[in-house]
Amino acid sequence: MPLPPPLTALHDLDIQLAGSGYAVLDAASLSRLAGVATGAFAHWLPLWDDLPPDTFLKDGGRYRRRRHGCFVVTPGTGALQAMPHRAHWQPVEYNALHGGIERWFEPLHPAMAESPAWAQLLSHLAAHSAALRGVADLQVPWFVEAHPFRIDTTDGIGRPTPEGAHRDGVDLVVVVLVSRLGIKGGETRVFDARGPQGLRFTLAEPWSALLLDDERVIHESTPIQPLDAAAGGHRDTLVLTFRRGGFQGPA
Image 1 (cartoon, rainbow, N blue to C red):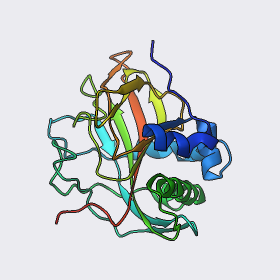
Image 2 (image 1 turned 90 degrees about the vertical axis):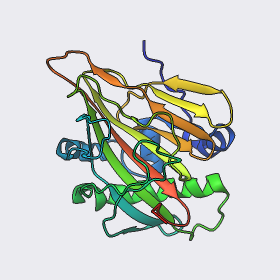
Image 3 (image 1 turned 180 degrees about the vertical axis):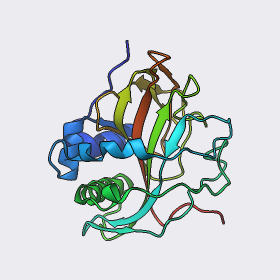
């Protein structure tokens, strides 16, 4: 049986993140955090059916589809600026499999990137990034990369994190579970980056979210397999990263 996630009450979010390096919010709490109506995010669900294949997978797999967008958000004002489309880049010390190369993905769909709920979500999460890092000035901008993913069972198995347990080289990572259809596996694992402590659970509720202090913990998701090989299945997520000082890029 999949292990349920250890949920955090919204009013304890900053304390939990500071103390343990992770927190899990149910869908209702994520909606309250963003200040949007329950169910508002569900309007984006059809967009996961329009994700182009990831052509950069070095294991030769065909199991991942994605888009990518970059934003600068100022939590004090809620101002959100979409940046010109750019490559996604990570250093090899954070992504040994796909690091050190510029990976160009198709941009986010305007129905997401231009949605008022999108600006609300990113602005409020940026405020929690600031709290996590002790940044009292809410006029300090945060640099956000957004990745809608679909991992499917086209190859019989799908790997949400082919690079293994990792950090992303940012301040805050947010993994939102969008949907699970016809699969087993996809267990989330979070480990203390400085020791053996860790936990494992399965995100199952649509629009529930895992928040991670990327300086303190490493994370991964286990492979998925179809419940019915003929029917196949998939796991959809939205991954958001928040970073101070600028986007990652080659020196």
